[in-house]
Length: 124
Image (tube, rainbow, N blue to C red; front, side):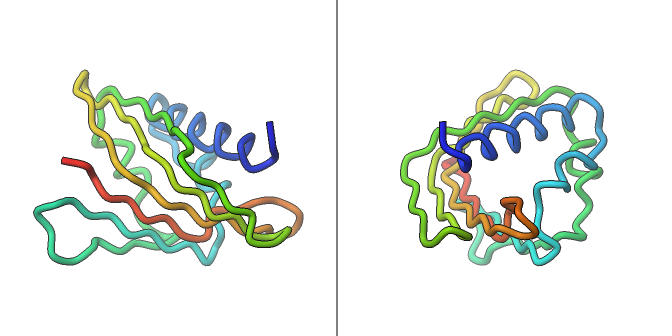
């Protein structure tokens, strides 16, 4: 398994730990201080934009029971310090499935890969 694949596995494990504990600290450790995210679904005309300082504890607290998994569909190493990863996020939220197409940009900062940008589009 490549470094970026290991980081992605650990990142989604951190999400699942956060869903259980409602504590975002481990999850935030994967994010660049320069992080920007974009989230949308078919009913929206503009994305919801957020950054490193968004209320992750509030997001985690919205879900009584949730689990995330990620399937890599495409991965491009743009240089030694930057990866572009596209894939499908599979979520089970309070027993109901929810899927999204995602694009992540990871950048090396102080020797570690950090999430710089994410684009999430819900499939339904």
